[in-house]
Structure formats: structure tokens, C-alpha cells
Image (tube, rainbow, N blue to C red; front, side, top):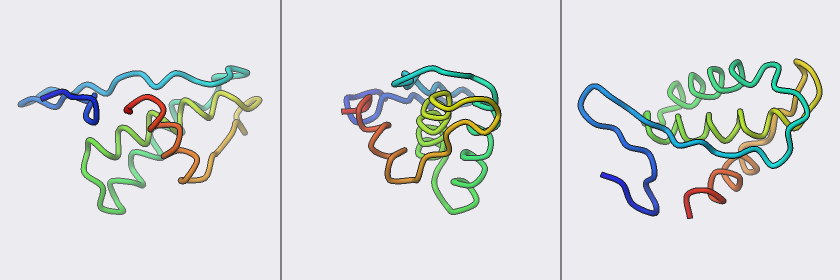
Amino acid sequence: RKGPKDPASFAAGTAHQPVIPALDVIDQTGAGDVFAGTLTARLALGDDLREAAALAAAAASLSVGGRGGTGLIAPLAEIRRHRERVTT
């Protein structure tokens, strides 16, 4: 099921998380690590897969706005705002 508030689709055995475009791209180093770390942390904190994946995609998208492996690790409130730019 897809809709304006639910752009991700999760069917039996498959999943799709839409791209969340970066506001600024300086360096992509570490974006995958940010995605994996955020996804893992959010699942450990009790989020369902859909919410965890959306936040992970938003966090990775923001991370490319920093230089090198240090990147930009945004606070959760900023990650949520960034995700909302795409899902609303």
C-alpha cells in the first residue's frame, strides 16, 4: 500500500524505501555506514522496519553534506524534518 504519508512499500518478502534527496552533496564517504547504523539503532529502539528505514535514508541523505568520513551526523529532530520534506 502506498500513499502520500506512506511512500515506502513493504510487500511479502520485498521492501522499497524511496530516495530522500540530499540538500547538499559534499562527500558521500560513510553514507552507507550512517544508513546501516541508523537503521540498526532505530530497530533496537523499537521502531518498525518502515520507520527505521525512512529515518536511515534521511540520515544518510543528510550525512553527505559533510566532508570525509566525519560527514554530518544530524540530530534526530533534523533527520525527522528532512524525512518529512519528502513524505508530505
